[in-house]
Image (tube, rainbow, N blue to C red):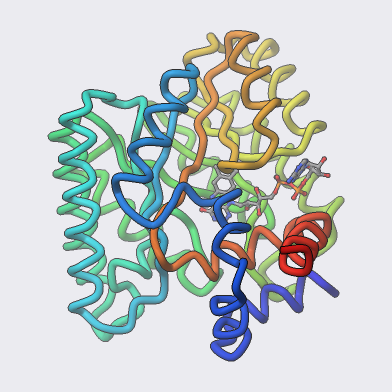
Length: 307
Ligand code: FAD
């Protein structure tokens, strides 16, 4: 119930105004977001990379409604990638991109998003790194997979994301588990109807395990994005079972969530990539994080009340 309400709130401009203008929202947000500027995110990237972690940087923003805004976000990614090239992190710091931020929902949006994504991929290539296409609301999945296919013709290392809550997730994973294919597997963070998605936690977890089996047995590069201790344990077992070297897959977690576990897996020799968002458009991202974990709602409300 709370999850549904928070996800609905993530699309509500009224709630958005209240949360964005609450006096202490920003300081709470810093737990999950690197800051508002490219300089902020580069400082945090430097710290994480020095700690032996990998990073994927997300410029916050989604559901762009004007072409000019989509162009501006594309340009922001290009500038960020220039700075990553200067810093010389290579594949240790890549970027995650939401196609709706690059114009996917505009008239002729698929073409616009593809063009903009190509520019981001070209800049990433210059920085010797990669781009992963975040997966968003279920209504965008087919379009995102079409754009991925196009992009991979020129940029084969472009990463895909599959959401285990989708009923078709296992089928998508089987299609994508081929040589050179980078695939992030996550549970899924949006509201989706029963007709397209599993809604119970157990059903989603079981789907995650089935998908992980397919990806870990396949020839691609799995990126296992979860904080769930049980799933992380199963991932380790599947790596042994499939005789995967520790550099042939990676764990991924969100910035600010289970940092001790991120370090523990790194110390055990695993690769861990931290999803690191920055920018002013933090509202939708924050609401999805709150929806995932009631304890985060308590933390947020307590912070608002106590300062
Ligand atoms: P949950 O079911 O939320 O949590 C399982 C268990 O993990 C909990 O019971 C608890 O033991 C532990 N846990 C979770 N949170 C915490 C916490 N804050 N502190 C301590 N323990 C905790 N979703 C999309 O729809 N599209 C994307 O492109 C996308 N990209 C992502 C990229 C990354 C790197 C990650 C990590 C997630 C991404 N997500 C994306 C979000 C994802 O779909 C889930 O909503 C989110 O990861 C929560 O699911 P979970 O697997 O962590 O399990």
